[in-house]
Structures are given as structure tokens and as C-alpha cells.
Length: 126
Image 1: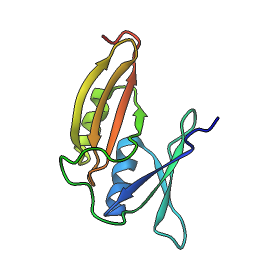
Image 2: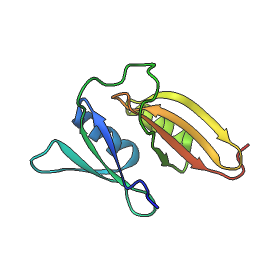
Image 3: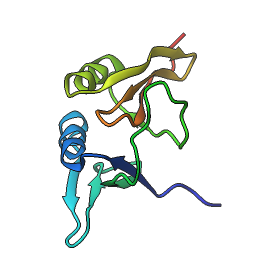
Image 4: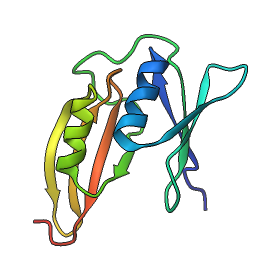
């Protein structure tokens, strides 16, 4: 069986998104010498790590449909992380919703227009 082992975030202004993801999720982003690429350490435990690179082309237009995989980040509180993300420059793509018996989900756009999910596990969600 195969599984996803790495994700990438594309950035028109890499320094701005390095600051955003560091501030919102406390991820560690480390520049790869000789490349315009940053390795993303998302922390210990379940999950995967990723990378951030300069975008090749235009950033997504506002209102454009999703045209890539969307990753969701496990958070202890969707409400708290929506506030953290919007406080750091994100906008809401889809507001918080309940997924019955699973949890809560919201989607935000980072400052460069990339969509990501915020997921709070909660089996009592209705």
C-alpha cells in the first residue's frame, strides 16, 4: 500500500509564508542550502513533514476552485486556530462545520491563497 509522505506549500513570497506557518502552527521551517526550499518539521507524533518552495507562476485567484490536494492540520480547537490563522493574515475559505461523530472542520486561505483545513477531533460533534 502507498501513503502520502510529504506535502509542499507554494509561495509567491516564501519569507512571508515561513513566518505565517511558524507563527500559526509552531512549525520549524529550515532553509535548504543552495536552494529556494525550506523543509517543514511539523513536530513529533503522527503525521507527515513537508516543504515550502517559491511558486512557479501566479498565485490562485480569489474564488478559484481548489485544483490540488488540500491538507488538514489536527488542532485542539478549530475556533482558536481560525483566530490564530486570521490574526496572522489568513482569510476564511469555509467556516467551521460539524462532521457528525468525527469532529469539527474549517478551511482557511494562507496569505498567498493556499487553502488548508483545520480539524478538531470530537466524536460528540453533531
